[in-house]
Image (cartoon, rainbow, N blue to C red):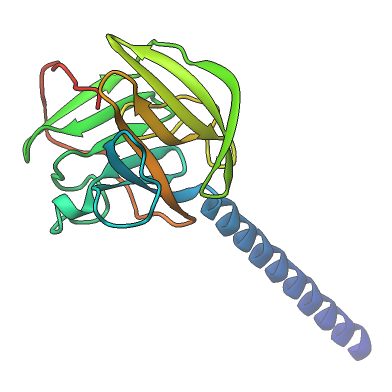
Length: 212
């Protein structure tokens, strides 16, 4: 009888050890799965001709992607910003929620402007090139009077890009406003991301958004 009790005790310990190992494996898997959706894309902003070097002569835009939301901003223009991103006013920044298909932008420290996803459709071409080690495909879109060319990669979670360039089957690593010659070109991609929250403030009336 005593032997049976010891056997049952050992059996229970083995079951508990296996259960804990299973839970630990699930936790590690979940962490790895979540981290695969966290990226920070760093773009140079400028005018043609495109400068793909990593010098600091051009403003750098950071696009932070975290699961189904993103936040883009110029770190150098607001060195006193707080995290998580979106909790405080950052000039020339934009939040995007892929599930709700809505963008939100701070107009100032108290007002936030929200915008639905544009109905314009992208035309995907067969052109390809590599940017930051990622194979990208070219697409075109007309947004109002502006003609925009973009290069996107399906290796980074779909639907994100600088400011109002969204909803492609991959994230944008380069964009060009063919009217003004302004461009964003990725010079670095990091598999990490700061926390993001939706900007809060008094909702501002609809405004005319400048397409850079």
